[in-house]
Amino acid sequence: MSDYMNIFDIIGPVMIGPSSSHTAGAARLGKLARNIFGEEFFQADIILYNSFAKTGKGHGTDKAIVAGILGMEPDDENIKKAIEISREFGIEVNFSFEDLKREVHPNTARIKLYGKENTMTISGCSLGGGRVMIQDIDGFKTEFTGEFNTIISIQRDKPGIVAYVASYLAQSNINIAQMKLSRKSKGDMALMIIETDEIPPKSVKRDLESHEGIYKIVVATV
Image (cartoon, rainbow, N blue to C red; front, top):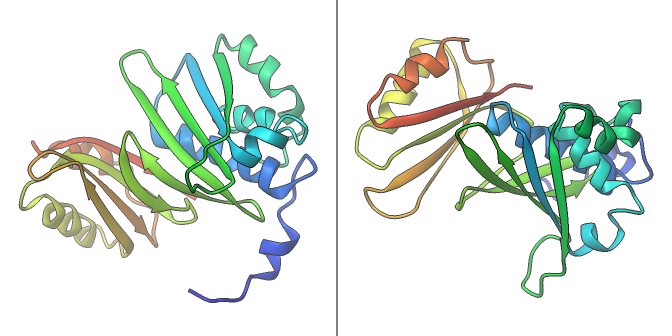
């Protein structure tokens, strides 16, 4: 990775709000959480940490994250009304603010989404310039930015599953840019993150979930 910042990291993206970290990044973090969850939800519990907690309301971080989980882009004029819009859709949004003493990125948020049958907790941070990093999904440590097409696989930690997925993508002419694997313990649940150059086929979820060791596939495209 280059030691030099890209000029667009400094200037930041086109957005609504005063801060690329606290507004644009927050909106992208929320939208990425929405895409990762991959289903309708009726409640969102959001914790803002450290810098997000201290200046988040003043910079509209709370509204931006809610806008993101509603599917809005950072330049959407409705960001300012996102919390009211969430109520209109019947989505309950709860905020809390914490100052963590342990070392974490200052612009960190934890988002828990509640669907009809499932819940998911996603933690991530805003890196500046509208860029974000997902760091944890349901207790699985990970690192990815959502800047690539991303396949998220929740699976059993057992031999052959990684090879099965890689073979499927190769047969679909999908090139893997990066792959990361996290597990809770040997033979337990595992999380695999695959970032690809091409958009995966629409059938990828159905095809990969047909494997007995793969429980859930989520596809987030750029």
